[in-house]
Amino acid sequence: MLFKPNMYQKNIYDINYDKLKKQKIKVLIFDLDNTLALIDEEKCPQKSKELIKKLKKDFDIYIISNNEKERIKPYQEELKIKAVAKARKPFTKGLKQIKKEGYKKEEMVMIGDQLVTDILSGNLFSIKTIWTDPLGQKDLKITRFNRWLERRILAYYKRKNILKKGVYYEQ
Image (tube, rainbow, N blue to C red):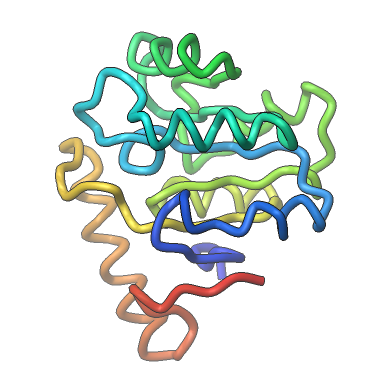
């Protein structure tokens, strides 16, 4: 099941990071748009800033995005974390770059709001994945197709009793 996340939470603030630490996760890889911030926010929201600051005590933090470097750079600089732009998710190029920093796959987790890019990318790379609901309703034009495809995948998963939107879980 390429699109099934290991965990599903409402947002990044509801994730049980203590549990991830106990599972020996060392690096948290966050998607940017609609996961860490709304797509039209140019600066990191205060709530996300506070969360990342807290998480940096226990984890290495990365942003991974299909966006250009210019979109990610303000977040990277403000949060003082590493980032991968033009990651081409669902391909695994960006995750391979992060792994080259010295991590084992079992120490990595991909966190994002899209099954078709974030979760598929993490699953194809064989790392733990956490799916969140999007922070906002507004999406980029390219994402509209992904959301259409995601709705079909979710309808299938719901029929098979595999995954249902709004029914959160962790492993």
